Image 1 (tube, rainbow over the protein chains, first blue to last red):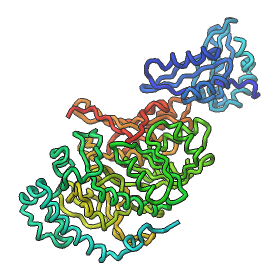
Image 2: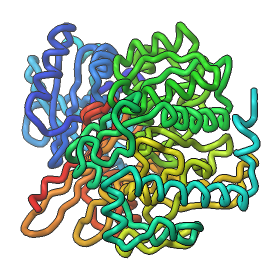
Image 3: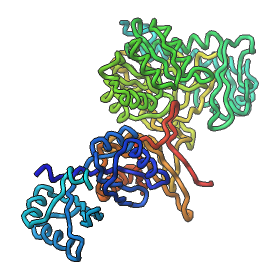
Amino acid sequence: MEDKIIKQISLFAENKPGRLANIASNFRKSGINIRAFTIAEAGDFGIIRMVVDRPDDAHELLHNAGFTVSETNVLGVEMEDVPGGLGKIADVLGERSINIDYAYAFVTKTEKALLILRVNDIEGAILVLQGAGIRLVDMADVQQI
Amino acid sequence: MREYWNPWIERMPVCELEKIQEKKLSDLVNYVYRHSGFYRKRFDEAGVNPGEIKTLADLKKLPFTYKSDLRDTYPTGMFCVPNEQLVRFHVSSGTTGKPTVVGYTQNDIDVWTTSLARAMTSIGVGRGDIVQVGYGYGLFTGGLGAHYGAEEVGATVLPVSSGNTERQIELMQDLGSTVIACTPSYFLFMNEVANNLGISIKDNTQMRVGIFGAEPWTEEMRKRIEESTGIKAYDIYGTSELSGPLFTECMYQDGIHVWADQFLIEIIDPVTGEQLPDGERGELVITTLAKEALPLIRYRIGDITVINRDECRCGRTHPRIMRVLGRVDDMLIIRGINVFPGQIEAVLMKMPEVGGHFMIVVDRVNELDVMKVQIEMTDEAFSDKVNDIMALEAKVASAMKHVLNLAVKVELVEKGSLPRSMGKAKRVIDNRKL
């Protein structure tokens, strides 16, 4: 079950110019590739969330560069890029009272959509989703996207 | 290790100390009247005849002296000795106005040094100690004051001055400094830098005592310093006008001993100027009983504190001032409510999940004062859920509202983003155009 958990990089950033550029240049120097990326902004601050190919290296790099950064366990759910794909996942989780804290999606080279989810019960979500025949990606998949 | 620098004076019964004070006060009043045109004029205007000042009860007849008097008579208009009797000048930074100049005779330096020798002995600093002086040397009194005091008690001085933090840490390790004298915020910064270098002050140095002052700090900050670095942290008090840093707490950390044979203290109501009974909180007023070049009569030093005249557990009979609770002039008036930066600090120190670095920003929006407190995010407090961070901001804001009786906007900022100071921490940005 462990191998279906994806380590997402989350970091705290003030809402001011240059913050993103600073992160990007740190990654460029170390050859870390961003697979998925989103910013949740709340007025004065934002939380940047990223799925990268080498999360442990990225965490260490950003921490040493002075950022407040954490690794968060999330799920990567593969969706058929067709109408109704998201609804099915939400239904399955909702039936078991598993709450989605946040989610964001992106489209891969293989023309599938990948949904990143943080839920309040990650182990439960893995069981339920796999039980419904939904494919979860693992870190090895993330590195190959 | 000696227990007292001068046991006879430090343990003298209060009634005998008061006799010394009365004699010195009466001599002082006559001395300044004869030697200073400034004081003669001030006394004449107040209708004070120096011959009438005989007891401590007469003290309240004397007019106050203010920092502005030192500025108005810049540079040496209040001095009571000709320049050739001076051995040194110190000059205040002038950050809050025109600088003030303090002159010292050899005796003034000796009295200053003795005061600190008594203080350092009371916290167990003496021969065998290596005292790293991280206060600035030069026109500021902190560096040289601590330096002379430490040499007097037989300690070895490491005069690093302030700044050059990595070097401070290197020397601390290599030479085995046991005592640090600097501002408490600078020591916290030093600790942060040491940790980043993989050095623990607690485990990798000989450091055991900190002598911290030159800026207000709180009991909670003391706890934080002592727990994170394993040293005992003592408060030191003084100001350049009085010579420099002069007094510290003793081992019991229960108030700062003010040497009564050298200084006479009272607490007054800052608004009416009336003396307040012991134990009441008010503005500290100090009369120097032993200074020659620049004696000060009922000097309004501007610090808010409380006097405790009970004999201390250490056996010293001299009065104590409790931790300085704020400055009369640091006080912010927000929507008519008095706010001291120290209150904000005290709230934050009780919330270990947030960092100790903060900045108060005051603006006036639509004729209304708005106070914002910026606090640095910590690794421990960080959650990647927006709601958690907003809940933390709300929790801190609510704790502040409880203490200040004032709505405060709390803003978490990136760690390391607020300015660190090498000297006095700047805690307030007041953007109001008043």
